[in-house]
Amino acid sequence: MPMIGVLGVLLLPKTKETAIRVWSLINTVITLVLSGCLYMKFDNTVPGMQEMFTIKHSWISQFNIFYHLGIDGISLPMVLLTSLLFAICILSSWTVKKQVKGYFALLLMLQSTVYGVFLSMDFFLFYVYWEVMLIPMFFLIGIWGGENREYAAVKFFLYTFFGSILMLVGMVALYFVTGQGVDSFNILALSGGKFVNETVNIFGMALPFAKVFFVALFIGFAIKVPVFPFHTWLPHAHVQAPTAISVILAGVLLKMGTYGFLRIAFPIFPSASVYFADAIAWLGLINVIYGAFCAMAQTDVKKLVAYSSVSHMGFVMLGLAAMTVQGMNGAVLQMFNHGTSTAMMFLLIGILYERSHHRWIVRPDGTKGFGGLYTQLPKFSIVFIIAMFASMGLPGLSGFISEALIFLGIYNRFTTITVLAVIGLLLGAAYLLWMFKRMFFGEVIEENKSYTDMNAREIFYMVPLCIAVILFGIWPSPLLDMMKASVGKLVSLLATF
Image (cartoon, rainbow, N blue to C red; front, side, top):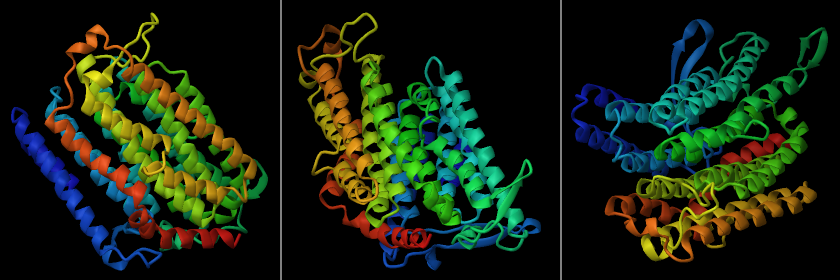
């Protein structure tokens, strides 16, 4: 559907800006409805790919490459999240004036490539979608971004492209070690730990094949998460990206990295995954604490939320490193829940920026950038409180359940890390409450008096996210039931090594 949307946008004259917006919205809403139909027909008891949702056609027969798409309990939550956020982003982009045709065409193209990553069952096809995703992101940041958009776009591109090269090396190595057979790129056929006894000769040294190329894939995916120390592209990209692209970047694209671990790195190299589990856990802890400290140091609210994403994705890494049912269920659930709560935060920051044209919590001269917003913007403030508490992991909202499962999953194996990770939760509460106090309490500063509260369009696209963070905080079973069979299958595989 998104590619049909792209074609429709390209066929419309660039002067028909309203028609382009409406067509894009209709396309994403239809895609969201179709994703809901997938969920309704999905069998939670089947751990693997479900036949009724599988497409497989020969693509490049000379190299045994197939156009192979499928869906399971790990990919379906990401598909639902993608569909929801892109529909909301189309609505939030209604006020975009610059090159409207190009903007919406690239946004729909980006949606198509994200689906491709989450649905690909052929490693080569996965890689193609992963690479093509860079094109719309590069232009969306580079053309519609902020003052330093070119620098941010180039940095994002170079970091991700470097990771892609490492992924390509791993993919080519797998192709040759499998004997270039019919299943050389089939992710399902490659899975199961078939390469545990293989070696690779590097600089005259015979090294374990699985460990060497697991590290290559790990770095490639870690850059996207991003895992420390590969995170430095993220704050620049977020600060310079337009609001909708920040939402997609934090809500969906970061999850592509952790999804890569679940779909490719862990199943194909389970022995190496278990071997490096301790290192993954410590890197996750560094993300949690380092990201929180960096967030505390920010005076730009968008940069603060960007660093909070680094911290929250650290919890996902901890859940993956646990390699237990609770930990991995918590990690996948956190991927979804963080996608909704951080989307709310970036959308709200975008709404505020449209009125203020700045994002300073505290200005460089030490004066307050905002003050008394709770009095001036009551509806905005209520939605902001919901988003903030969900991000904080307050019981009753979505962030609590996923983080609780992660802690339950990692405690027995990584007790010390679990205790230290609690510091990240405390720091998260500290920087979010500090931000809220500065911006929303106190007297209304003079320039804030002209700000208007959320309009009907803004309320309309925030309501589904508010419902999601409240609903899945009280009743997470629909998501957990969806993923538990597929997660259980992966945990069982890892437990044999």
